[in-house]
Image 1 (cartoon, rainbow, N blue to C red):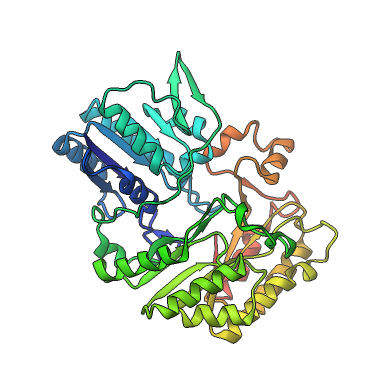
Image 2 (cartoon, one colour; image 1 turned 180 degrees about the vertical axis):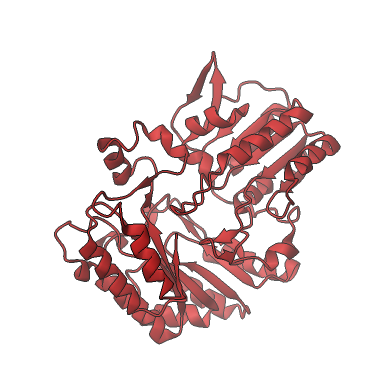
Length: 432
């Protein structure tokens, strides 16, 4: 069966300032799970397409004549309060252009689709949707469609329409990521020069991000996926050998948790003698000088860290709650490991005093870049989304398919101008 996979992400700026074209690694994993002996594959990546990308979509469909089309939606938005960009309308246009050229069923999925599957399905109007890590699920769906088997509604994560109603059982599909991503269909030379580097998965655990030292003491079983270290190293070697790629972004919610896993991976990279430059996410807890040194020796060039999280008025002084973050940034500075820090403003309980304390804290750091985020980009199921409901900012969480922000009432009228003035005096600060 001929299968066309389309990556619709065209957001190519990091923090609205730097070029960063992220490779559609999720779609590449889906492609890697398809049986090449049963299916002929074509991948259309819109990241580097020109302004007339919809014509590129229609041309690809007419030339390839697919029997199944998969659409990957990476982000709901760019999460910027000052310049919000909603991603779903572009994907909807792509689906409409596909339908103008073929009657092949259209299946939508991806990280953004999985956040609000029914709402995204309603807006985008595909034939089917898959919520979750879709490698195995999409491959099984393709196999069943190929043989004309209509009973695929039992597949995990499937979203569909029946008798005018959108059906989703609330269960996401999960992948073991047992097969490597198929990258040959992508323009690897362009991605070689883009952004933070090619994504290599190490660990996944939903939206897990620790907000305290105690929260870092999670068991390995709490992670959805922890890939074997030898597989990670082998994948990096393969990228270097096949595509001359030495710039990697390790996809990991918190690279340093569990600490022993992070150190073991660093040792393996060092022992492999790879000439790498890599970046990743670092939690501002559970870090020590040994790990920073190992990361630096293994080729880490930059880590991304979040700032203080949680309610500013939860009973702990803001200075006390920033202490772990301060310690981690000092370890990075002393170890020569560059870092960026992302600090949000306008969270529940925010006041002028807490804003000034956060700004003063940032002034004492030496980051490669500090990203000051105005408001909290709302996601369903979060405490801030519940507050937005209580305060009447939204009437239902289904509205969160569009860019929606929580901003504390006490700072709402002046915070943007106040932060603009602060960032104007600091060339390494970026306001979002």
